[in-house]
Image (cartoon, rainbow, N blue to C red):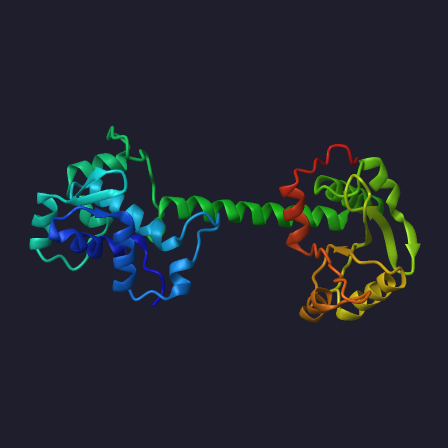
Length: 295
């Protein structure tokens, strides 16, 4: 069974509270998870932000909606019980309780319209037309779509840029991520080596206690395993422990597997930062790299 939408949890939640006892939200979540026979994986599935379980969020919003309709009441923080109106509602044996059903209650209409003055109310909430997502889900998924679109736009700009632009982008990115010491040091390192398939050598930290070998390429086709093997061979020739392969393209599964699993220099692991396709754009956004100084 898939995770039920938040409206589908309303009636089971109200039935759970029918004993007229005070219940905690956590208790209700656990009970409804059993009612819907959710798997462990479904119970642990998180919102895009990673801060809350999807099912927990949906039950929480079902509780909020039932409270605003006057079917449940808050007794203290994160605790609730059924009201007389809620019991009367259950006595009608409804087959489903959803937003349309709750519209019959004046308090809920005020809540939806954003006119109800309640500390726990969230005024002006507009749910998507299908009503399957909670407000947080709608906001988070919309945010993710915006980020994805922006990442694609940034990647297209990078692909259309000159090789020197790409080198400067790599420098800015690595410095923003904490590598390379100063920007001057990083700028002098990238694009200067060209030694056996290595484009540059950069400090891992500001103290320069270790170095990272870099290959940064604007790539039209998919990066395959042989290309990573060549880079690995170059690293081994330098007795290097760490290497970063940055590209505007995609890596094949074989290339990724090789980059993750290979070992060189005895037991020292070789690591790659694979910035491919959306990765370049996402990292640029995450590290707030400005493009104003690149032209």
